[in-house]
Length: 384
Image (cartoon, rainbow, N blue to C red; front, side, top):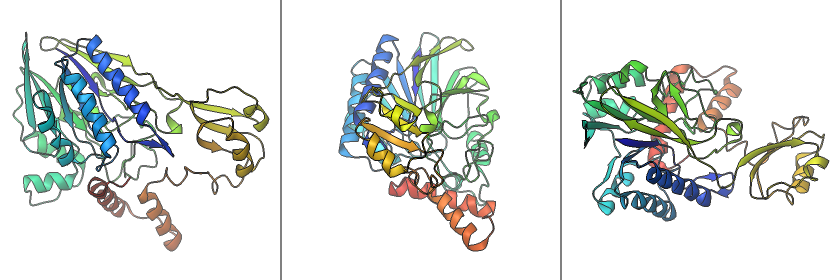
């Protein structure tokens, strides 16, 4: 059985003020083309189908069109919700699309299992949408709370009856031990960019996945393997922030699953419609080049120019300026143009305010509590 693994489609997303509709449609079409070319039988989507829980009608139409292109070629789709999705809304489209589209929008225990057969027997796909410890506690009706995500995953796994003689694949949308941030994940953890300290969101240990032949992960935007070739974050299909520019190119994972224990994995590249590039130089140099006007650009101005002066001179030359940095400007932190506030998470503002008022840092317990609150608010209210 050949399988394509992707995640973090973020349909409906913007970069700054730029609508990524055309860019997203372009890469989704590449996913379809790749699936057809590779003779894929199943496409896995490991969460964050949409960029917000209440997607626009246009975003919904794009997703449904993407699914229909796959289903019309008899390619099955198995999808779970991520922290950006509304599970109820995501599940609604299964009635429109009919057979071949399997979706799990809300956490359930035991996990929903879809079994598909090939010449070697059944392949079991376990669907684990994004969850929090609170969701697990409520669903399982536990008397005591769960302190972290790893303990929550313990409770989930011990209720499963996994036949390890068969081939088993799990879809999940969580932080798993050993990951590296991609730079554009929009979670509400208080991590300060440190993947070893994802306070409030928490990391799930690798041993929880030992009974699975392939682990199809979403949530991290940087494509990467974790420990072994068959535990993977597919990564997002597009680069969304300046911190991703120098990172690895985007791709989807192609899995060639044969008999138990025989599995091959390869990456198939995804090319953007409009590349996201970084250009550095003096203002005179930046206004004396011939850039591709359709690129998304991150400009670094090495002069002692004011941000307003530089922006006024650069705007006519670059159609899609995402951000401009002024390393020599002492006011850089105060005037990071349009994106500095957008890059901050709500929890960052609260922690900074608390520090200003009390002259001390917010303790870890309260950071975790705030992170939980923001995650729930994000799912219910559609707020980034």
